[in-house]
Length: 335
Image 1 (cartoon, rainbow, N blue to C red):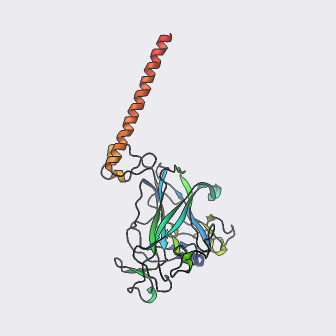
Image 2: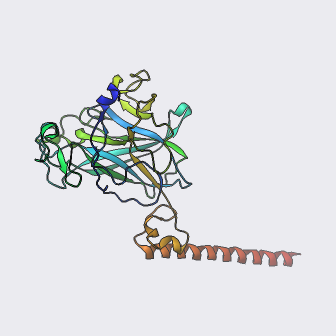
Image 3: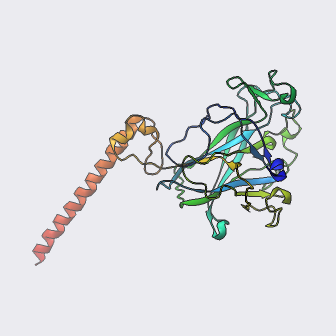
């Protein structure tokens, strides 16, 4: 790992625990480890003077109307105390709210960032990392402890889900995405030090919020350039090219091994319309959607949707046949 990576990527050991997200539709790209580890390497925005981080992805299949996008995050903030002062205290289940933006761009010539396809901002309840554990001592002092793996961690891996249902976002086979949010001193615009959390006992949770990365290749879709990423930081040294391509703009950050092993984790789901009753059975209603990407509440609703489709098709066919018969009679009469 290069010294640049050492500054940007915060390393943590693996811990197996199930990610708490549920998304509908068909996966067209997915590189989020399953089950989700307790933490993974991550890229912090406040620590690295950044405000956007992302990647270029190639989708599988043919479904292209997005329903949800699931993004991996790593939370290092505490309700009281800090992760690096061995005094982190968090009430189990405690969260903080923060708006996060998903940007989706076309791929321009040379794999540069192209025109904006869609930009969606939603507010998420981000969990604080768990309290420091007495089981974590020595060099692990101050970390939280996961009993199932007997492992100590600094950050806490979690996911957020952008709900895009009904927005009609249709994507090409390849896109560039960026995850964007503001912190105290960096962003568009920076939040500033006047926020109440800045002088609280734990500080602002968003200043210790990172984008989760992975070394695993995608299980669905293709990552076209495993050594590249897209980044916006004000610090030249945090780019692979040392800032030669400019600073403070979201741009391609390429290098022979620059981001290898540290790719942002993300899952894209697209509409997967149910067409037959069998599509709805045996749990199929949970992965199928309407034509617009809306999820089904249960198997019965899915089957009802399919039956309505058939009824409408039959009606359309009958109307067309009836119109044709009428037109044919009219032609005979006229002649």
